[in-house]
Image (tube, protein in one colour):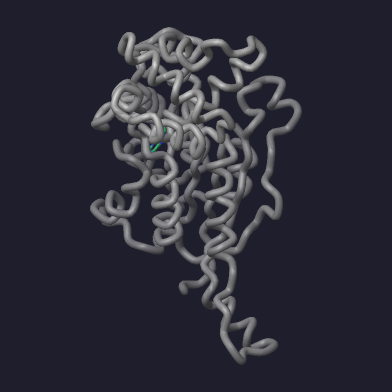
Length: 306
Ligand SMILES: C[S@@+](CC[C@H](N)C(=O)[O-])C[C@H]1O[C@@H](n2cnc3c(N)ncnc32)[C@H](O)[C@@H]1O
């Protein structure tokens, strides 16, 4: 989603080195490779490894698949001999792929009956089933409030605690039933999407990983290099927005004035924001893909080193 816009902001050029932090089915990476770039593609999902490997094999060693969480971007690249300041652009197309939502193996959707797992990386130690079984009521409520912005987090946590006393919750449908017991029909879907989102974020440590990876991206980019992030919910977007703001704010220098201050500020700031407001999908893209309705793109350029 927002692929064309992401490519415009990345200013892709042949021979440049780019990071696709979320390679998925390989759509973004392919577009970069077609323009002659070298690409390192990160993902943790074995299905994504297979899709992208097959789709991108024709580009030979210009494409490197890195089977790691993007939070390990810095160490993974340094281990491959890619130095700080060597990268022309980093792109994130966050969240989950349509394939992950529709498959029954991960249990991300409340519309599909599947084992309650939610791990985007099967190597992660704790599944959603274990979270739902082991967290006490107040910890569950906190997850629903903080990661789902759920107004009835305490009541829902109580429903779950009662349901699991009677019988363990092992599937998406069992969880959906416990969450929506006694709820008005027209409230069920929006509540379920908040609760499922919250659990997915908790299981995959999504927000912490994003913060780590944004920092790493800034360190890996060369001066003039571009950082482009497409996010799909307000929590992610807020992290990106705050990161850009923090990195583009000059450090205050007491006594600095006029041109001198500007020079000092510029040399200290890490990023220049390119999107005053986030870019959203066009009407045509939304018509083709309703899942794009919450997508927001933000872009920034790396300035001189702090
Ligand atoms: C929306 S899809 C990306 C689609 C891709 N742009 C394409 O064109 O096919 C998001 C992908 O990011 C991966 N992902 C999510 N969080 C990740 C993380 N922390 N580290 C690595 N990959 C991650 C998911 O497994 C999924 O394959």
